Image 1 (cartoon, rainbow, N blue to C red):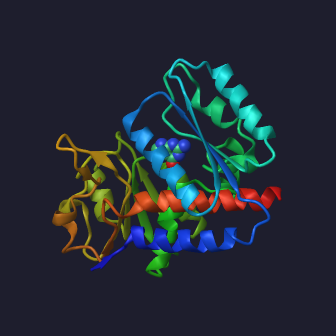
Image 2 (image 1 turned 135 degrees about the vertical axis):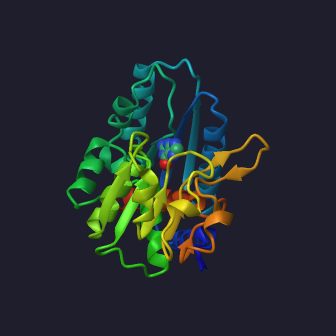
Image 3 (image 1 turned 30 degrees about the vertical axis):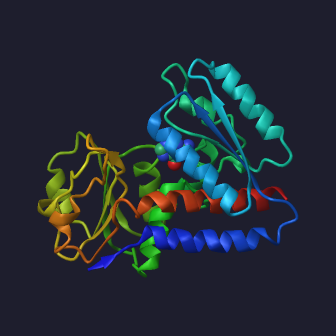
Length: 277
Ligand code: GUN
């Protein structure tokens, strides 16, 4: 059984980026906008900003009040769209309920949309002509590449259909000629579907949802879940102990997909920088 060590792959990606950035005429600039005080979002934004600084990017962190109006937020984005040395703009999600997330995301210029969530970037991914690709699904593909896993003709079951992970994940896998099943909370016989999978991508946000009963012998599992338990510990969507003797490869939590998402954000910022320079 192989452990897909996302932390190690991410470290290597970050080292390559830091080396490449040294040859640039100016540092790539990333603006990260955080609205309100969601504790998980605060941790993610801190980690993203730290990673930017470490590879030599210019990083601008904007912390806005939870009471900001949609118009004020969009006007801030317009200012960053026009900013010469800001190449990437990321609005940390979720946003407060009074703000339309899609309207905010689509206010970001597609060439600065380093999350790849805008209608234009998602549309390009769906057409299999991707430009900037959503970080977590792209990170999962990189992880499967690290074990030279050939997705062509494989049955991939995605547990979870979010805009951030499940849906773009399905397109990434389809673009590599996999056969894809996307499950959501209304899916019937979800265990049986998962059990027929060559690859399970667990992205439901439910701690330890996937156990040995869900898994075919020799399957590959990527665990996208990052769930904070009452005891303060992080848990994935997969019960690692239960499935470990059945799988051929699995990504751990922590140290799996989490560090990859951040490394790919840096990669996407370099893509955005190059597109503008
Ligand atoms: N919230 C959870 N994951 C993400 C992500 O990848 N990007 C943004 N902007 N917000 C998130």
